[in-house]
Image 1: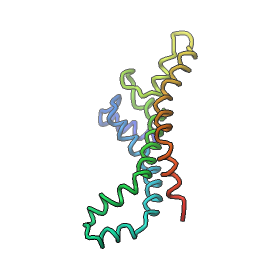
Image 2 (image 1 turned 120 degrees about the horizontal axis):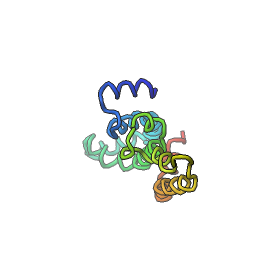
Image 3 (image 1 turned 90 degrees about the horizontal axis):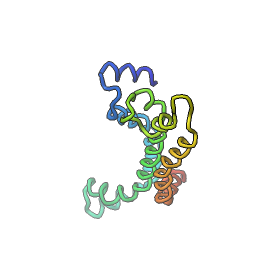
Image 4 (image 1 turned 90 degrees about the vertical axis):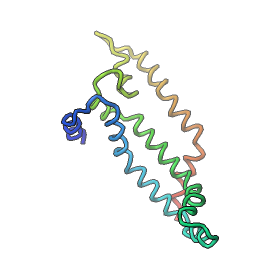
Length: 156
């Protein structure tokens, strides 16, 4: 998958740019987000939409005021899992980026601890801990929503 994408991005002339990588990560995380959200939206009762329509709301109002608030845990869970997948990805970033200023966190860690004749594993270990802090904080603050979103689509 990386080879054809590399050739395409090189042909277009957008290698070593963060914006095509964002598009690649969007496509990369789309399947898991779609799968999670499909199972979550299937669990939202049709009666909620019908009740809103009976109360006189339009379909857009029902979507905005009824369905979206109920769907927030599922959307939040899909967003967090997609962010974690993209944050931890190494192969795409190392294939499409060449300058140190554009490197993502995992690629920057590999370059950070390299000297001319040796690897400084203490620096690499410290960088891994520092890079892991945003993900750990995100999961700690959103733990309740993640669990609610993951378990909401499991009951039939």
